[in-house]
Picture 1 (cartoon, rainbow, N blue to C red):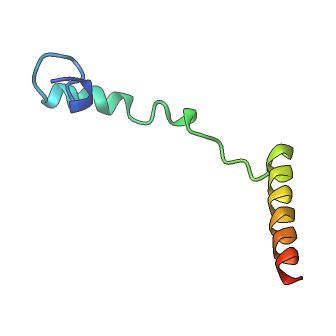
Picture 2 (picture 1 turned 90 degrees about the vertical axis):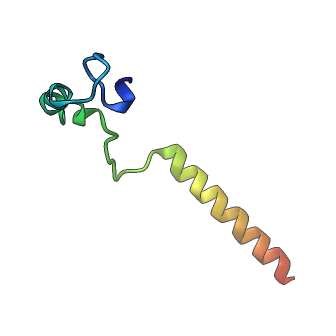
Length: 64
């Protein structure tokens, strides 16, 4: 058994001792999740506008 199978104390068994270890550490690393930032970065905005400009140019070119 290993940590990814639930054996947190590496004794070869998944039991109440492993559950106690998991319960004590539950939510401990929640702050490491990706922050939701509603403000896009300038590079992302520039990429979006350049993609839109390329699509507009292609559609305008196909009309002629």
